[in-house]
Length: 398
Ligand SMILES: [Zn+2]
Image (cartoon, rainbow, N blue to C red; front, side, top):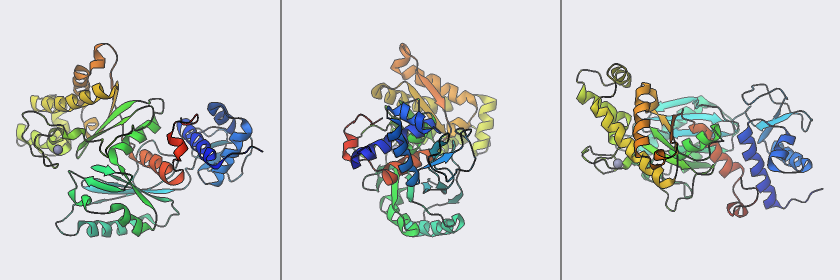
């Protein structure tokens, strides 16, 4: 019998979980080997995690994307392990500027986001939180009853995740006065936690591509935000602010921004910003995203679009030069436009990234994997909270 002190036990379980997140599906022996553990220790931890309803067993021939039902039998040799995919463990809610989306989330995550219910929400002048709560109650009915561990809520803005508060939200000011976690917690009677939306995207991207440990992710949509992953984790930030790359001022740009500033980069490159420029440059061309896509496919990169992309690239290259990163992952609306847009952006980033002068700078498009990141946060904070010993880089802190 091996004596495992409780904190060391938690460390081992976290290491095990991280390794399985990385591998997707693995046998007890493969996990033991990857972590340098003895097989009896690995088997014991695996059984604990099955009892905790974190892992499930699948038959040998199930690969990472396998869909076969898990077996209830424990510890049979030749069976592989994966994070639970057969039932939801968290409720994920993404609060967007115009739309709120919900889904039950399993611990083993899908490659791309799939939301079960979405509703439009535009806050009126009075009592926006009550109105949002009302909509959520309707959505809860549509989702039905599930036995869940907690709610993970992805939100934009400057978020103090430890305090579960939104300090400032340029595009959704009503959330600054609202206690969203408490509101959601009351509806579902579950613990609820906030995660900054860009951090969720970056964590999800890392889970999808675990071999890429260092990158900047920049998402374009209703706003523009970014998050960094270094050595497989979001780095420590002294202040609860990290994603606000969209609020870098662009000289000569006089558009007012939701943050109270003037000339922010996102006023040019967000969906609204691009549509505004498109309407001015091509009157009568329609003001829809589809019309813009067709226009670019036909006309290429016109000067107004070049200027917007160069402004985004300058901010991105600046962040890469300071953070020491050679890879940027672009998600969201720009990736939906004709390929010439990403090509132009990529070249402009290369021009500003110092590393490109003697090394290789990579700029790649990827789908949003927000729910994967939300699950990672839920596991870290609700299923297996970090212990103090964890924070001081132990041997098993992968
Ligand atoms: Zn701004």
